[in-house]
Image (cartoon, rainbow, N blue to C red):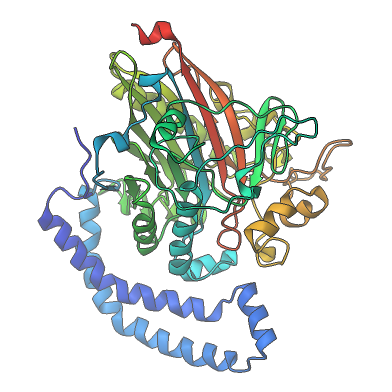
Length: 541
């Protein structure tokens, strides 16, 4: 059954909900501005010092009074709106679904399996901190609506450029030239599906789309490196031709709509405003959800099925948001015997506070079960499964003694983490993904190019990446002698092979740490490209 675009069962309910929210919004906005006017980011503080602005105290004083009065004046209307809005959450489906009609059906499919029996798929994840402006400022990030529009433009710029690889076979070869460092400027080039563009001709484009890129040669450089058989790079642009994108902390509804508007020309299938609101479970009200899950999924491929679950064990401020798991089944295309090829994609955002690993451990238990249930309920015998990916902000890393419980969860025996050497031990080339919030606007990291250079140097990286968290009562010794300084990597893209078709083989083509959103978020986005090869025996069955 096709997904419904609206989360409401009919237009009448949707209309009443819209009226209720329209009554709430002015009061909510004035409260947001009341807090924002007194909470500055470090960038704004620096700008005021440079401009010798002495009017800021007056702005804070009079702004606070005005917004407080307006907040009180609109509170009765907001109460009426809440009375209309809250009961309707019991019949609300947990997401909006936007589908962009393609110019032709072929633009939504990947013909790699059908033509040559192999294909390449790109995934990316990023935590954007798109909270209401006042709350985002506590993370040293402001102007949520402007950031949302800029982030959408940056992502499109990155994923729409040609994927160019240059191989030099001379003795002085430096290997491949990374797109982010190449002599070719980024170009807007809208495409669907993973492709390696080596020519501007249609035939070459189609051949690149059907195939997959081989691993870089022995001498790798200018961005693209290889260790432990895993090619990786720090890139100032999003990887070209990302197929599915998972974003976290897109809590603000207007920001989600701006992202959808920016991304929909490239990602024709988008799930946003994912989550539940008000009393949950409905009519029992064991908890009240002021915010949705913050999850946002954008896919080039059609979404066949989608399901959301919220974590019932949130605690403290995290319990105010409906954090959980979003699972989706996407239609990739067909194989050489015209059987449908599908993929499973799961995105999540776990409990945040440090020192509460037992909550995250239980949430990992929940999402493992929910993913299994979803795939069991939606897997058809005549389908081939090409990939099973889990990604998101896990809020624990693989180097902190405080996160030992989560590091040893059985999930990591099912799903493979290409950055992980074992429990509590990262591979030496890995880079932490959580930035220190007070430093977000320092010269070394405030632009994509500067952040890229900083992450590639260990002596600079340790100034700006969050360090590991010590176990309670134990001093922190990090890193161990002879080991590199990595920092907290809490953003993950994992893949599983046991749940895909037995005729498929998976290999990691590339892991990417992305700096394109420098100054726009406090996380470093991560990309993963997988090559999937379907044995000819499987295609013949």
